[in-house]
Image 1 (tube, rainbow, N blue to C red):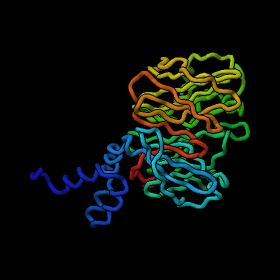
Image 2: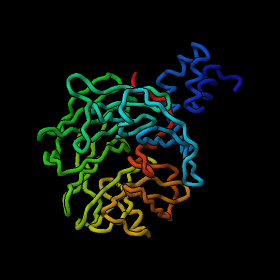
Image 3: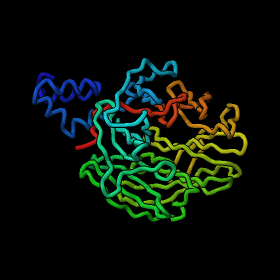
Image 4: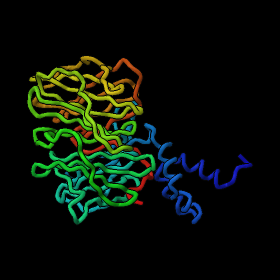
Length: 352
């Protein structure tokens, strides 16, 4: 260690400290500020921060926004810290649409504007433009956040407007939007199809597209972030006699889906994608059937082998999994009556 340059020693140490400590370290001197602002430092610090101990839960209600650590041993949250939104809002009307490496893609519901926001550093970037890019309409649009091979963070925005489906791509590097051709079936522009948020895994953004009636069409749309081409793959072979909902999640760079299906009562299976085919991991978990009137969100799963299903009204079901722990939480929209997201504390900036 004594033979290493001081620059290398500082780099190696500070890429391992918490994100908030890196922010404070920037004020030590000009040399440290320059070092800690480089792309290489941010990238390596981010890669070393993607561990369960750095995960936080952002919870939003009508009055407050708070961040809490996750206590894996008890499957609960730690003490909260109040967060002040750095942007104008009305009564906390902020929806979390997507997240990646500490960045949240959010929508301001009163203006429909899209923003990138890092709640750890408080930095944010408005993505809306005068030519109508970057405006999101709930139940019509879908958003996916990813980072490409050049370390450029991008937002894919799928818009349905007046019978027209448009796809637009925002680049953090060039701070602009451009159009992307959509080459799958145009019928997906119908409001009868429900698009999920995009899930980034292995160089591809995945969206579920489910028709909103019994026995409807259910597909998975894949966007290759390198070729910028779309393709379709099949949905897991779940029964088509009831309502179907698929929730995608990236687990250690492998795509999984929690597929819920049923008519009056819901059951849930866990699937993993291998190539273009789905393999069932967990079949018919031993939990009470969930009423269709409640529906459900897959809330999170934890290191002790349990995962949780929470209904819209806050009722929590626990499922014991006889498999290797995932050591991570999965973010959804609702948490025990709050809306919010799970994110990892990083220093990734929403703008260059």
